[in-house]
Image (cartoon, rainbow, N blue to C red; front, side, top):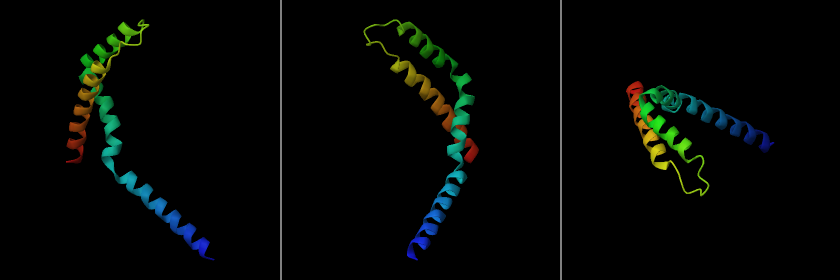
Length: 89
């Protein structure tokens, strides 16, 4: 008879964990804010895409766009972080 009680307790724990995730708003907002921020970071996005095109013919595998990618990502991330803070404050 002990197994039945254990199974229902486990199920209850999973349900509570699911509810906690849904209540955690910043997790939900950030991807939305990142999409909204992309136009503000258009310059970085264009530089990154231009780099990707420029190196697409590189046979050596040594060319990369890491710098441009990080500049673009930092712009979007900073913008989204500020927006999320504004929403939760």
